[in-house]
Length: 540
Length: 63
Image: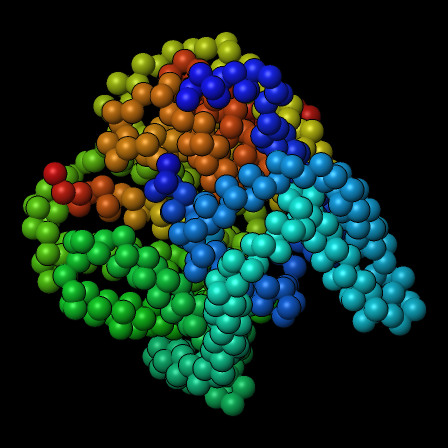
C-alpha cells in the first residue's frame, strides 16, 4: 500500500497545502487590524477604544456564543475548511475586491465624516461605513475558502449557528437589563458614603440624595450609576466563577458558594470606602490628585485586594479547602515568588504612585527603592542564574531600540507634558528624580520584567515545575504567547510584542535568562540616553 | 497542545462576551465621569491579579 502511494505521488505534483495563501490572508488581516488600531484618525472612529454600536455588540456576543457552543468541533471545522480551500484557484478575485472595499473604507473613515457632517448626511455616512466593513469581511471570507464551502458549513452547523445567535442576543439583552439595576444601588451607596463622611466633616458635609451629590463646599462628587459599585461586583463574580472552575477539585462545596455573597458585599463596601476616601482626599489634600489619580486607580486596587483576599481565604481555611495537603504544604518562599514578586511589587507601586499623583510620577524613586529591596531579598535564588555578559544580547537590545524609535516617532509631541512637569521640580529634586528614573529604567525594570516574563511565564506554559524547564526547550508557541502578553502589558502593544519576541529569542538561543536582561537593559539604557542627551522625552 | 487550544478557545469566548457586554456591564467608555473601574489601568491591574493568583496557587500547591 505504501509502495503504491509512493509510485502515484512520484508521477504527480504534490497537492498544494494552501498554507502560504492562508498565511498571506492572515497577515493581511493582522496588518489591516494594526492600521485601524494604530492610525490615530482611523482609531478615533473605528478602533478598539471607540464605543461599539449596538449591532456590533450583538455580532460580537453571537460570535462569542458560537465559539463556546461549537467549541468541541472547532478544530474539525477548521481542518475541513483548510482541506476544502486547497482547490480554491480563483481566491485572488475576492481578495482584490476585499482590498478595494478596505481601501474605500479607510478613505471614508479618514475623510468622510467631516464631509458628511457639513452636508448633513451623518446617517448615510454610517450606513456606508457599515456596508463597506461588511463587504470587506465577506470578501476576505470568500478569499479564504470557496463560497460553496461556507454554504455547506452553514447547512451542517445550522443548530450551532442558531443557538449561538440566540444565546448572543440573550446575553446582549441581559446586559441591557442590568442597566435598570444601577439606580437603586447608587442610592444605597450614597447612604453609606454619607454615613462614613458625617463623622469626619460634621456640619460641613453637604449632601443631596436626589442628585446623589455628597462632599464639602470645597470638593464634592456625584455618585452616578457607573460609580455605584456594579463594575466591581461584575468583576468579582467573573473572578469567582473562574476560581471555582480552576480549583473545583480542591474546594469544598456547597461551603464555597458562600464566597459569592461575601465577595459581592466586600467589593460593594470597598467601593463606598473608595468614594469616601476620594472625597476626603479631594476636600483635605488636592482635588486634582483625587480626580486625576485616585479615582481611576483605587477601584482596581480594591478589586485586587478583595479578589486575592477571597482566594487566599478559600485556600487557607479548612472550611473551604478540602485538600489538607494544600494547607499543610504551604511554603514560605516558593520558586515562583522569586520570579514574580519583583514585577508585582513594581506594578503595585506603579498603581499606588498613580493614585496619589496628578499626572507627573513624582514618586518614581520609591518604586525603584521598593523593587530593588525585593530583588535584594531574593538574591540567593538569583545567584544560581549563571550571570554573564553577551555581545549578541546587547546587539539585540540595540535592534529593539531602533525598532522602538521607528515605531513611536509619530508620538514625539507627547513628551512635552512630562518634560515641563519635570522642569518645574526644585533643582536638587530634579536631578535626583532623573537619576532614579534612569536607574529604574536600566536596572530594576529589566530585571523585574525579564524574571517574570522570560524566567517564569515562558517556562510556566510548559510545566508547573517551571524552574526545571531549560530555556532551549521552550516551544515557539510559548515564545509567541509570552511575548503577546508582554506586549499587551505595555501601552505600546506592537513595539512591546516585538521587544518581547526579541528578548525571548535571545534567551532561547543560549538558554540563559541573563541574555534577556542584558538585551532589555541595553534597550532601556539607549532610551534613557536619548531622553537625557537627545531631549526625546516622548520615549518615556 | 489540545489543552492549550481548549484554554485559548475558552479565553477567546470569554473575552468576546466581555467585549460585547462591556458598555453595559462596565462603564468603560464614560470618559467624562471617571468610572469605578478605569479601562486605562486594566493591563496593570490584571497583571497584578493574575500574578497574585499564580503566587497563591504556587504557595498552596499540593506536594
